[in-house]
Amino acid sequence: MAYKVNFGPLFTSEKTEYEPGEPVKVIFPFIATDTSYRFHVNADDKKEDYKNGVIEITFTMPDHDVEVDVNSKNTMEPEPNPMLTPVGAFTGMGFGMFAPGMFNPPSGNTHEPSIGTTPDIGVSQPSSSPEGEWICPECSTKNTGRFCTNCAKPRPV
Image (cartoon, rainbow, N blue to C red):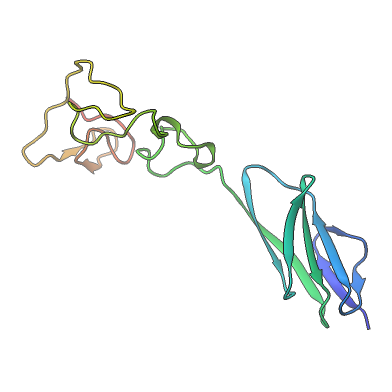
C-alpha cells in the first residue's frame, strides 16, 4: 500500500506516493541568503542537504502519510538596541563599527585606549551628574552612559 507525501507549492518531488521503506527526496528550491529555514517532516530519519543552491530533504517512507512543511524567518531585522550596532544597521549584516579591531563601545575610561580603539584626540566629554544618570532630550529615556540606550543620541553637554 502506497502512502502520500503532502507538501506545499514551494516543494517538488518525483512523485507524491511511495511504498513503506522506499527512499524519498523532496526539493526546496527557493533559498534566500537573508532567511533562516526550519523544515518539518514527520518521518524518523529526515536529512537535509544544501546542494547546488537548493535544499534536498531525504527520508525513508514510513507506513503512514508524511507532511513536509517549512517555516522561514527573515534574518535582516532592525536591531532593537542601537548600542549593539550602528543606527540603522541590520543584524544580518555583521557587527559594523563594533567589529573586532574597529572600535570598542564606550567603556567609561576614555583616557586609556585599548587595542582597536580610536585614540582620544582631545574631544571634551560631557560632564556627568552626581548620580551619573541623565534623561535623553530626544526620547526621554533614563541613561547612565555617553549615549542613549534607546535612540543612540549622545549625552548632552
